[in-house]
Image (cartoon, rainbow, N blue to C red):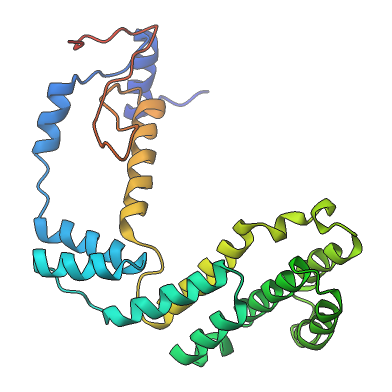
Length: 254
């Protein structure tokens, strides 16, 4: 015997039978948005949080001066962190490691995975530069012991990197993506997150997370609850607009 549908399920069934769900025109949606109270102080903190974590020191300093929003970290530390990330994204692994140790020696000591990935990136840079002898020496002297001490944790990653040496043109290797800029950015992001954690800061700014939550909520309302309402497709413009559908023409078009 089937169970009776819940209130939510019954509402969805009714919506499907009608061929469309609830419909809010732009004016109604705008009214509902204006009813939501947002404190300016909270919004300013979100902006400051974004500027600090993304490394925009000058913008953060100016925003602090103009809005009176306090910054909970030393702005000079932003410069050091951005310099480290920039060095790593440029392939200067040794400079990035030195800068990290100057900030806090414990960052790399307490994170074996991060240390391995930095050494792996250094190996990739040697291969990228065609320095095969140095790459082999570095793999044997620095990376192999880490694998032995780590119980083989990083074997697959090292093997994928070493595959690059098996090809006369590393770009033809199945793991050639390791030579791309995205790999540098991935390693730099991992190091950046570790530095932020050591400084007791958020590892990701709240604003992008809130944008993702908004996009999820819009999709949930449309796909699961069959509600039609003005959506924000262009995050930069942040202008809610009703989408047109062949099966449900808009009623508030101007």
